[in-house]
Amino acid sequence: MGSRAVLQVFEAYQKARVNFVQTVADLATRPQNIEALQQADVMSLLRPLLLDNVPSIQQSAALALGRLANYNDDLAEAVVGNGILPQLVYSLGDKNRFYKKAAAFVLRAVAKHSPQLSQAVVDSGALEALVGCLEEFDPSVKESAAWALGYIARHTPELAQTVVDAGAVPLLVLCIQEPELSLKRISASALADISKHTPELAQSVVDAGAVAYLAPLIQSVDGNLKRQVCSALAQIAKHSVELAEVVVEAEIFPKILICLKDVDQQVRKNAATCIREVAKHTPELARIIVNANGVGAIVEYINETGGNARLPGVMTLGYIAAFSETLALSIISSKGVPPLLDALVREPEDHIKAAAAWSLGQLGRHSPEHAKTLAQLNVFSKVSPAGRQARTALCLH
Image 1 (cartoon, rainbow, N blue to C red):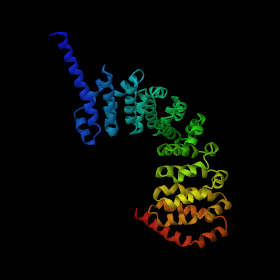
Image 2: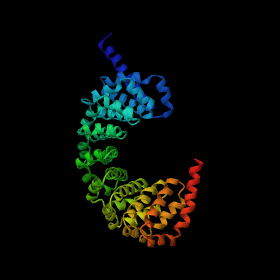
Image 3: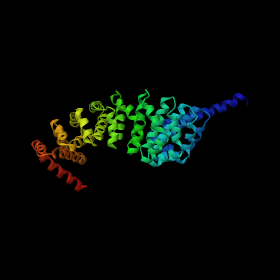
């Protein structure tokens, strides 16, 4: 047999491997194929292909594993159980950008399911490799790494702290400054996932200078980016007066009020949530919202929304009204009572009714004049039936 014939054997073998991994990766995109792939023990067949000497085969094998792990936690656990994570982490250091992107996708797909699976990703040594990927030149590699880090951080304060300790936050702040919109979105989302847990974690994000770069993005034309930015600012502001003041000092008012009329419903809700998290802390912060004509914008927001999207707006009016009779009067004069009454009467969810009743109580509690205004608007005749209805619903449960 000549050398040409020998080479043909290897070429056929390579083509078969390419065909196998590409077909499996394609099959893994359809849920109806997942059980059959699992029964065929596809994990053990894909694992050695991660170390194949053909880069395209390595990438396709990683992509297939990521799609399988993404499907459910059982398959993600199978990735962990088959010892695949250390191989991926090892390869993240020196492979090409396509492989790094695929490997980060697998780590993200495993981490997303539970704190335990995220901990397995951390235990495999992935954090250092993922943080290293944030310094890559290629934006898509940075994006994949940021996404994985966000999925790890979102589960528990302890996991978020490991992400911070790995040095991810300053690099995520740098990623926000990159021109690519998708990278900005994922980085803002990761910072929100870190900030949400504790004041200390939110402070680590603030200390890295994140707020100064997040706040201007409220005016972005990209709806998905505005969602993530408003969410991140809300997660920072909610923890303490000091953190809320940092957010306000970044001049989010009155810019964020425009987001309350955005075409994207989630942008509107996240913006309202951010305003609520600022309003709840002190009379001074509530007054900043009032002075920016925020009460009228919130009243209009409540009028134009329904269901759970209404809740942050309803709560914002209650928080502002609670601080002083002057602030409560500003809400009454901005026609804030009718939408609260509408939420109390018409919303089917008891927790929204309760929030509306609480906010109305904050408006009426300061003086006889405040209470008289509510009485003239027929509030008290509606509060009692709503209260009975809520109590009946609770008894039935």
